[in-house]
Structure formats: C-alpha cells, structure tokens
Image (spheres, rainbow, N blue to C red):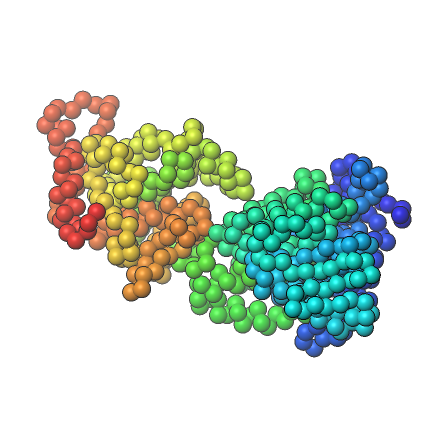
Length: 582
C-alpha cells in the first residue's frame, strides 16, 4: 500500500477513518482507461480514450483513489459504495460507464468479479454493454484476453473467473447475484427503488463493491430519482453526511436565465456557468451549435423549453408538458399588488381545498389593475395555508417555506391536519374588506367550509372540475398573461405552483390543470381557474358579500339581508349548469 494522505477531494474536516487518498490507485484507474480503452463512435473511433480534465480530476481520480480504513479486513479499501454521476445528455456518461465496466471486470484486482449493467429494461442496460463490447473488439490487448458471448450479452475473463453481464430490468433478475460493480444507467427511468435496493443488498461479501449510477435530470414526477438526486446534493454540501456516496452533479441553477449560454471555465468560475456548467464536454466532444439550435426552437415552444432545461441544462423541472411560460409569468408580476388599495373593490374568489394534510389555496381576482378598477385585465391577491407536517416533509423546500411564512405569503398552521378555522378567519377578513361577488369552489373536501361560508353571507358556486368547464378559464389565464394583464405581484407561492402545472388535454383539444400529472402542488392555479370561471357567469343581481361581523349586534331583518340561504344553492347550480350531472 502506498503512503496515504488526506484526500484533496474530501471535506476540510473529514470523519475519522475516511477520505484518505491513494495516488497510485487513482493513477491506475486513469491509466487503465487511457492506455487500454478506445473510443467507439464518430471521428474519434479507435483513438485512445483520453479523459478530459474534468473527467479525470472530478470523477475518476477521487472515485477510485479515495480510501477508508476497514476494521473488519484491517486494511484500507475503496471508500465509495455508491457513485452518483449527474450531468446533461451527450456528455459521455454511457461511454464512461462502459469503460468502468471493463475496469471492474479486468482491472480492479477482484477475483471472480461480477460486473452488471442494469437499467429500466434490458435494451437500456444493453447500451452500456454494446459500447463496452465494441471497446473490447477495438483493443488488441482486451480482445486477446476477454471472451464475448453476445447472445447472452456477457463478457468473460477466464483468467480471473470474472464476468460482465447485462441484467433484466427488474428486481427479480438481481436475486442471487454477488456484484463487485454495478453500472446503473439513467436512474430517472426507474419507477421505484426495488431494483436499486436489490443490487445494493447483494454487496454483502465483497471487499470493496461499488454501484455507479449515471443519469440526466428528470421531471419531478420521477420520484425515486428525485429522492436520490436531493440526497446526493445534501451529501455534496456535507460529505460527512454519507461518506460512502460519491457525488458528481452539474446542474444549472433554477433561477438562471435558460437562454443565457454562460461562460466556459475560468479562474473565477472553474466549472463554468450556464450551459457550460451542466455540459462540461462543451468545446471538447460536444458542439455548442447543437445546443443553440435547440434553444432557438425552445424559445418558441414551451414544451421544447422544458425538454431543453431537463436534458441540456440538467434542471429538475415540474412538468413534462409545460403550460405556462415562466418568463412571461414573471413579466406579469412587475407591478406590486397593494392590498390596502384594493379595499372596497369588487372581486371574484376561488378556493381549492386539499386533503387534510396539505396545501389549501384562496385567490381573489379583481377586475382592472391594482391602481385602476377600470383598466384592462386582472389583479390577483392569493393566500395559502398548510399544516406544519407538510412543510417538514418537503425538506428540500423548507427554507423557502420559512421565508414565505415570514413574509406573510403563507400561513403555516399547527397540528397534523388542515386548520379550517384559520382559513375561515382569513376569508372572513377578506369578505369584510372586499366586495366578493361569487366564491368558486371545487366541491371535493369543501362541503363543510362552504356551508359555513354561505351561512355567513358569501354566494358560493360549485365549479365542475372538468375540461369542458375549465377550458375557458385556462384560455382566459393564457390571454391575460399574453397581454401582460395578469397582475399577480410576483407572489412567490403562486409562482412556484404556476411552474408546476401540467395540463390534461382531451381528444377535442379542451384543457384543464392536472393535479395527477403535475409533479408538485398547483392548488393556487386551480383556485385561480375557479375564480376565472366565475367571471363568465351572468350577473342577474349584485351579490350580497358583506360578511357578518360578530363584534356587532344585528337585528333579525339585518341578518336576513346578509345571509345567502343554503337552500338557494341547488337553484343557482341548476341555472348555471343545466346539463351537469353533479
């Protein structure tokens, strides 16, 4: 064993027994790749696989050179058991996995090594194998030593009784394996963690096993991959949190203007900025003109924008089929919304109540601008409620929630479930300060609160949550945004939800916001759509909207004038929705 020093790639205050660095081990891994492996595609096919500096310094050397003391074996062994490699597409992930597969098979000093490629299905896993097979065929040394059994997608090293094998894309296929190395490609496609856990739990008898997972970012609906991504980022910030995990992740920050190419690596920004950060191969084997062409298309197509952000900028976005252009959304938030200046003005209210333990949204929609009720367009005044446990569950957003709560955009209630009393009190205050014409609601989970609100003076209208009924409100939202006439004051919670919305589209082209498809909460947009629905209703009479003030005493006749009896609900619904079953 060569002399060990503290790893230059580890934390400044490493945990005892971890983060030692063996230069010889790191150099061996680099030399194996560069001296025995060749490229297999394009103009570099057959040329030595010379690692770029970022591949060498940020992946290969720290991954294979970082050691730990194993008190069972009483020797230093490779520290990392999990490697998380996350970068944008076409930055050489699969080729690097193929090179690692051959290193694990014939260059890792492991007798009877078992190296496996796994992915969501056999074909995906076979991509890494096919490249590795071609690397063997093009290398005189490796082709002389290794035997390829292509019908079984298997490469054998008879000298050490070792093999490299593609596994079927399910957990059952992992039973009975004893892997020394696992290459896990495109984790984003995994529906759950069963295959991941099955492979990892096979490590038991190996001295220094490792699973190397490579992926691009995904939509936030990819729950398992998102969980591993978020854990990896926490480990990157504090390596002592999980010393067995190696993390290489290049993601463009969410608040970066995705159209800004950024700058190549420099002394000030060693990893580059913008596109260069997520694509370390730019300027080497990745051509920036391809990205520029895709970006030009994405500027015109919201769905292409999402694809560009995910696969080229390595950003985890909320929806596969983007509905709202967030740059356009932000332009509509340039004007501040002052609650005090809206007092006494007529408005429409939308409410969306969640399950008992999650977000609830209340949105007021005022005709006109914040300053002028006669202006074109609309002004939005939202508020949100959430129980404390729902905040705690979203550990990756906790700091945002704390800021939103502190700044008054969000009411976090105590207790495990929704505090409907807090929602009632907030609505009561709004009803006293604004002239609420109608309250639009999704009937799911709303009956009790809506009955109480009606008994105290609000005119409530059930909004069927069908594409036929919500298509018009969705188009109204789009039209207002396009005209820069949806003045929402850059409310941060509403913006977060707007960025989450994915649409359901019927065969005849009608649309509605989809809670099932959207990766995160969209309650504020659902409530806004409910409010917009009301703006198209005929106004036969001016609704009574003054809320009962329990600090005053009213006569029976005054109370009668304030109340909208619940018995009128069925009459109103029959008028507004004559053809609706519910």
